Length: 591
Image (cartoon, rainbow, N blue to C red; front, side, top):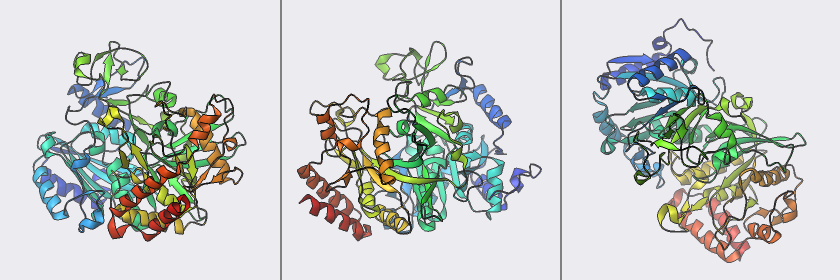
């Protein structure tokens, strides 16, 4: 736990372990000065003004977007670089085929050569942060050293950053995740993100973009934390956490894992349809979920983040009103376009006209989209209209259900329930999405993304599946596990399910199953609702469409099961036998 704040102790003297590491890094990187971040509003204002003076940050229309700013990244530095992201374990097999691997000594030698003198002429910022509520036993701390003030501003939004985090590190005996970052020269050929899970450390060089530079996010909260969670007996997952309160007053929390482009943020901030009065929805988190077995035999979850680093394009009052409303003040935008009124603009916003594109050029459609497709907003979670104070509860929230989902055109039904925790682990492991013609030029190519963790699991997927089985075996009251597919299509290529707020109809069936009140029919792949089990009141949908949404095609699923078996085989002897046993059961029921 954190100690009582003591503002009289200089930050550099709060933790001997952190100070020693900072001295070591400064000797390698040779900065002109060192700044210890305290996370105060005054510090934030000062850093903003410095970036504005250097023309690296610009204020937006103060009347319509108060305290909002825009930043632009280098055109070659606009997304995560998974092919340059490595897990550096002593044993290559521990990293698994789901990760790029490099030997730790080789990685350190390569990175040290890049870091040598890289901060000359720059400021070294020491960013102590806490992932999770500062006084939660489930939270974990880290320190990022960076030469980017833009990173500091983002970390101040996304984490509990500053003196309290440093004091907690000191109180915890000096244990923390070490994250070293430099933008370098932003040379794509000198860009690497190295993770050393056995040492709880991260090294990133050559990028200023969010996921590569905000080391508390994917690097710490998923890749390092997933490894740490395995050694400590908990789960660090790429999941949203949403609270659902029924008209009866029953409150349940659900954790959901979806690959990209599957509606994750929209579900986290879901607005109930007018045809379902009395429901309330609360956002605990939109991206990352840490779950610990509680003393009552249930899983308890925290959102380790304190802000949202969301994709701007496509965000509008129609698609996600809560997100649209919350980013109209005190928000940091990256790589969006601008209107003549100095307001942010992106494709799908639903109004306005861009005059300047994301590279600062006069907008011309011949140059491509006005906003970069991966343009982002960084905003504090407290501005979300659906925010709940339970996000700061040090005990976390109890999870009633875990939901996996993918984007499948034909095979996966709208929703089905796993037969058991063990079967649910197989369901999560086999999560997949299909590519679209617009994205790749090929339709229907299946990409497996187990638990939506393929880019983020810090160790071998086979061991990861076993860890899920181990955690479940300890739970007296495990959450029920479900799979959803909002994207099933008809023969005309149109979506059969309306999605968005109407997804609450599916979630409400899940909660009734949790309570033991809803019906279902057993199928080879799990338990599906019958049409009469779903609340379809006020929804304009034909009965034959509902039947199609809830259909299980035996031949297609036999092929799917064979494909899953091939996929599990990629992890060799590390794949748990229990996974194959569950798959055997599915195939037997399909025969």
